[in-house]
Length: 213
Image (cartoon, rainbow, N blue to C red; front, side, top):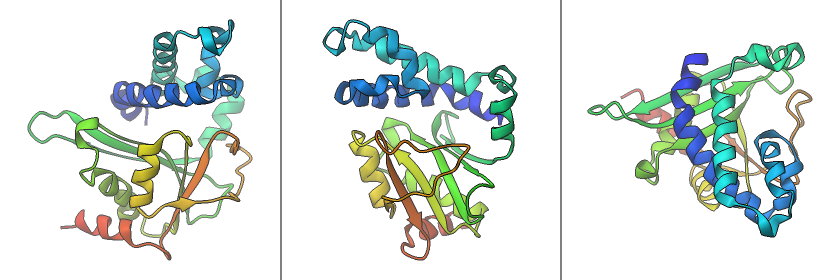
């Protein structure tokens, strides 16, 4: 897990910071909501009209990269205990010729939720590969490795239209009444919860079948 997160940290921090910056431009009050956004709060001290958005994106990149590269022991025993109860699954895709990272998926299963549920933590695909069905293959890999999964859920910013379109094309729909995990609470005010159910859509099942060819 540690090596995987370090390996994808640069790509994840660049692309995630860009979308989070766009979100803050629309919802500047969310800067105090916690997570990566909290690190930008000092940059909003003079009001949203005076924000240096280049600095915001840089600060977000630093915070996100720290999350991917940090030693969990630095976060305290309470946080460690919560994370240690989860089981994590990862997959990444590289260019066969250049070994360049093209995309990755990171997910987890937590004991507080039904055993057939898996949480999609992050799905990142490089701009050059977006729209090539790589997202479907990465998501399909979850069903390939864990065929018992019946539901995949994730959180997306309402401003991230490209992600919303990708998930819709993969068979995801909005979950307006999500089950709350006490260890990882969902703030419905600033995210949309999306879910994929295998008994409703077969998009990812078809994608996973390609991995066995």
